[in-house]
Image (cartoon, rainbow over the protein chains, first blue to last red):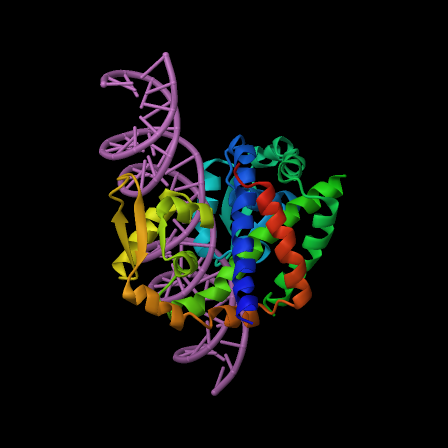
Amino acid sequence: MKQQLKLSNQLCFSFYALSRLVTSHYQPLLGALDLTYPQYLVMLALWEHDILSVKALGRLLMLDSGTLTPLLKRLEAKKLIKRVRSKEDERIVNIHLTAAGKHLQQQAADVPEKISCSMGFTAEEFNTLKPMIDIILQRHAEE
Amino acid sequence: MKQQLKLSNQLCFSFYALSRLVTSHYQPLLGALDLTYPQYLVMLALWEHDILSVKALGRLLMLDSGTLTPLLKRLEAKKLIKRVRSKEDERIVNIHLTAAGKHLQQQAADVPEKISCSMGFTAEEFNTLKPMIDIILQRHAEE
DNA sequence: TGGAATTCAATTGTACACAATCTAATTTTA
DNA sequence: TAAAATTAGATTGTGTACAATTGAATTCCA
């Protein structure tokens, strides 16, 4: 039982170490685009949805305004997005892509393939890990 | 193929989200001990090894001195550890547990069980995820 | 053996994460 | 409908992460 508990620790540590490993593999690819990994995730979400409120982005990426607000300001400073306060509900800030932000999608098109190659996931790893981890994430999702 | 690449992205995002989910589950448990999750990992390593250099800690936790030095100073400020520069090789700083640091092990004894319960990993998840992720980590380990 | 290369930790600077709090706007409800 | 509750985002403060650089100590090796 003590052993089981110790292994449980190590599983959590494995998740922590793996997350940082993945980010470190993105860094050289994204650095060429002047993006960090969290910034890239925001751009991915916007390339898919075009316009998203800060709240909606937070729900998608599981990040709060304390993280997103400064990150979005940095993306705006790079002219990739615009932050526009909604007129219907002035509490809401909607995030739009600029032309440069839309254009970046082409330059980022090969990132997924390069990461896949860099991380070297096997088909079995992919097909086992993805559903199993997503079930864990859903188990703890809000509502 | 486009689909495959997109899924690959999502796998990396799953790792990132899962890591933060796990940390958030540790927070209330560790907060009671006045520890953060990375600080807890350092304490775990020291409870196991007693004395470790900054370099050795970095190897175990896959963290560099830029992260560890301030973290270790915070643990020292809490009187849980002592940082002692080696006399044989003055480049090396060895980390020792204080009496309080050793004592904390008892108070932290139930953390693994509580986390296991909080995260609700099934035996199948544990037995599948742990070896698969550790193989990925080893695949990218130095040397 | 003495200068070059290496090693270890610390420092600097940028960018997340997130708890807690705050403010303004909107919705609820008594 | 006006006060209370809720919501959205921003702000503040603490603590990681990590690249890049620095400086001191040690090792290499010509």
